[in-house]
Length: 258
Ligand SMILES: *[C@@H]1O[C@H](CO)[C@@H](O)[C@H](O)[C@H]1NC(C)=O
Ligand SMILES: *[C@@H]1O[C@H](CO)[C@@H](O)[C@H](O)[C@H]1NC(C)=O
Image 1 (cartoon, rainbow, N blue to C red):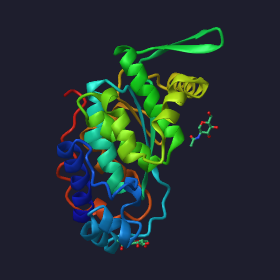
Image 2: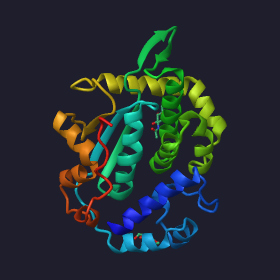
Image 3: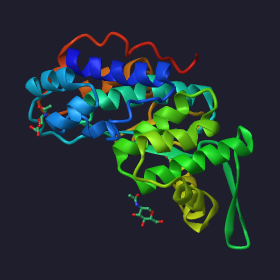
């Protein structure tokens, strides 16, 4: 738990105070930092990785899926993503998977075979949703989450996108993101997000809207908003990882009313 927490704090401090300025020698996605001694050294997290490897458990139960239906510029969504969901995933990615659906309260219209979207917080939000949707489709989950974290924790979500991609998804050219965003691929992917959001049962009536293993209830939403970390640990059916045993200080602070 401590090791993993240090790892998260390292990420958090780097992003918060380094303005995404990671050491240039570490270009790996977050999920790969501990994959070898070399990468751990390059990314400056050797001590944390050794500790975390040392306490690692072999996990056998089905992963707990956390779904988040959100909008790129909604303040509560940004807080949930950056202060709760992604830090929890860093700690518990062995027992937890994440499904991000950027769409929320957007609306779509079919105009001549192409979808036109209207977003709650305007065109910029539609653009943010689209960039994140393209990222989720075009790169591995770890890189996509790290890049989305970088965007959502920046003051200017859209303005930060290009440098966040360069730092955290360096294998992707910005031009290829742009062509997804402006082309048929992005249009179709966003339509899929619309369908997934419209298929929610019960239908969402606010954002961020959380599902656990595809299920939404008031109780699950409340528990997730109070401590997603504790909820995932408690819902995981296999032997609990060591991270679940310790104190969860720092992961309780989010409430969706903030
Ligand atoms: C952590 O464990 C993995 C798999 O057991 C191993 O491949 C990797 O080299 C270890 N990382 C470190 C920094 O020891
Ligand atoms: C990306 O989107 C295409 C459809 O445009 C789909 O066939 C493919 O499976 C998606 N890939 C991922 C990783 O989601």
